[in-house]
Image (cartoon, rainbow, N blue to C red; front, side, top):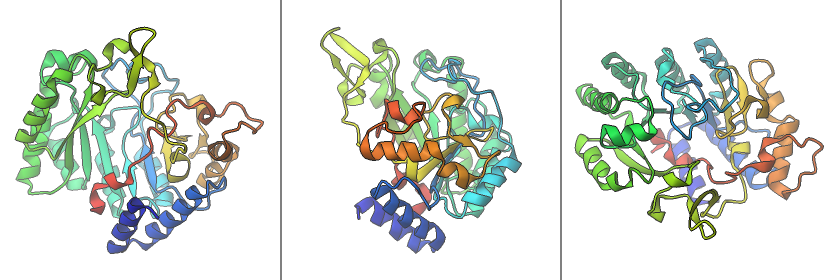
Length: 350
């Protein structure tokens, strides 16, 4: 048993969450054995309150309109359907995937419901659509963590990637949230300022750290970005996913320098549900044609062990495409093992 598993087990035991604990142990065992059929439930849910956004970020499929998903908003009733079935087993919910979650006006009610199931909750937001009323609702709902995406310390730097975003608005809304949290004397949400590093903003890293901690954020995340244009790749290798391409005497956005893990944990640990109920095997599946089913049409259990899921798990085990279905998105994944989940990031457990 790994140190990570021991920490999660101890946390769940301390909190008295026996059903979640038993399911976690079962899933970890089945994942360790690379079992094709999974009898446990996922303990991590990524669910998209919306799959649209008002920003046009250059490497985001949503911002660039690259994916095939019809624009949709998750209804509160459909969220209840999902969490009523999965909630007793879930340790964590990510309320974000392809869209800006705060564009869904019922997001705070969803957080409240999730907390009734003792689920750790997180939102990623650009904070361009936020008000004092929203700040109070977010805090009272019990959100555990928010990651605020601001990739610059000036408007010019910020707007190069966050196209259509307003730096002053996002920065002032971050200060608003911090102020409201102090006013209400609440520990949560844990506030992380995420700074995606590109070549044009890498010179601001230390300034972002200083400003962020002076403001009172809990964490400043200097984050490597997945980049689709080599001219954007940072010159400092410490902040880059990519290795130098000796042929072009530059960097390539096609070759990752980090060794990838052998197994993608998503197929056992997690499930991704889009606003219309379409189920993706992980957070990087852009197009609905590559999804594994629809939870508003079929039952969760029918989807969780259908042909596509079992074929993908089998592929993780033998790395051979022996299944008759060649359209499985997992067979040609470029990010295999690079986006595995960090269950230790669940703020409410520790």
